[in-house]
Amino acid sequence: MTSTVSPPASPPPIDDLQAWLAGFTQTTVWFEFAALAFCVLLAWGLASGLRRALGMRDEKSSVLFGRKLFDGAMFPLLLLVLGYIARALLLTVVPLAVFKVAIPVLVSLVVIRVGVKVLQVAFGSTPWVRLLERTISWLAWLAMVLWVSGLLPLVLSELDAIHWKMGASTLSLRTLIEGALTAGAVLIVTLWISAAIEARLLKSAVGGQLSLRKAVSNATRAVLMFLGLIFALSAVGIDLTALSVLGGAIGVGIGLGLQKLASNYVSGFVILAEQSMRIGDNVKVDNFEGRISDIKARYTLIRSATGRESIVPNEILITNRVENLSLADARVWQSTTVSVAYDSDVELVRRLLADAAVAQPRVLQDPAPSAALSAFGADGLEFTLGYWIADPENGQLNLRSDVNMAILRSLREHGIEIPYPQRVLHLKRRPEA
Image (cartoon, rainbow, N blue to C red; front, side, top):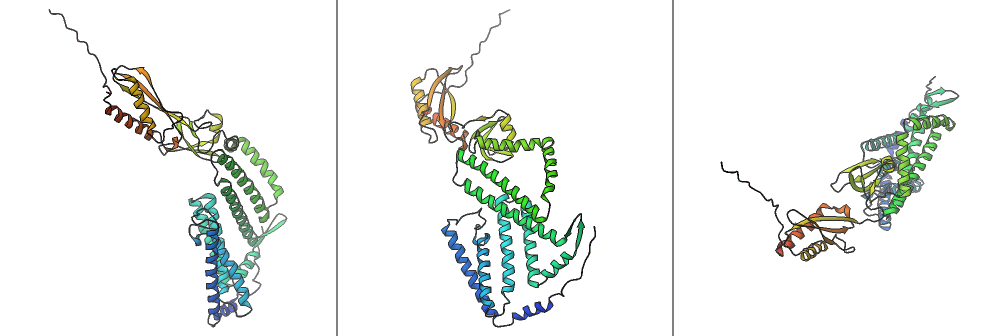
């Protein structure tokens, strides 16, 4: 590898910097400040109007509109466009000084806002995403400072002068940096498009539609990421024909060491496609019962009524036995058992038990609750009350407690005894000596 450094093509732009600083002493600078302030107010008004027109006042996951107006990318984008228009108009009238700083600052702000919001929408708030956000901010502001100071062409020339030969091609440090930035921009745009498609597909989708649209969303994101990666590699200058060897190596790796991972991804698409398990279904897997809250490409998230969450690899859901409590019918049957004294009125007890279940708002009226004499216990008559509910995700123990409390009050009001455990003790007398 050979590296050469050539002298700069032009001296540092000290004269241009001094001329730009001298421009702030002229009276025409106030016209620029007024024009910039007008652009800010107009961009703010346009962004607010678009936000109200699109009904995105409380949108938190939008790239263009954040929680607040300046959190999204729409406001700096509009301000940048208006800034370019104002600069073109003022350039024919007065010498520019303020807009030589404003335009680079607005370009950096747009890059930061778009990059940060796309990463937040695509990956959420994770530590490595925050690290990428800070990296994008530092790089954007550094480029802005070099641009404003006039040192950017000089730095690019110095980077271009550092080059080396690799095989039949010659690479420079500037080419590598520009290729990396291009690849990052392409991936950010790809993530933006895939996140917009996912939000559009999952909007107002429930049940089976939600699972099907989730499968389409995952497939679309995978295809877009693959195409974006191919375009980014070609932008860097990597020969794509060399990827055939890499593809063969990846195939061997999947066949040997990554077969479990590949199996989980394939199982995830199978689950979403055939809809054997859907988001919102209540399932029981390996003695863990809960509601499916999300189906990812590699795993499924199941949340129990106690708040615990289980991450189940998709391969387990395909190869093992899974009880889907709401595949064909979302209703769930519950029961409770109570004992009463043997001299109690059986028909009255059955009616009181059924009325106690009917009084609960969550208990379904069709099919109606039913009470039956289930067993002759050692201490009394045992009755079983059965009823149906349609919202097991809201909790089952709390409803059973409400039903039992209503039964207890009703039996006490009607004087029906709930017997204590009874035991008969036989005493044998020892014969007298």
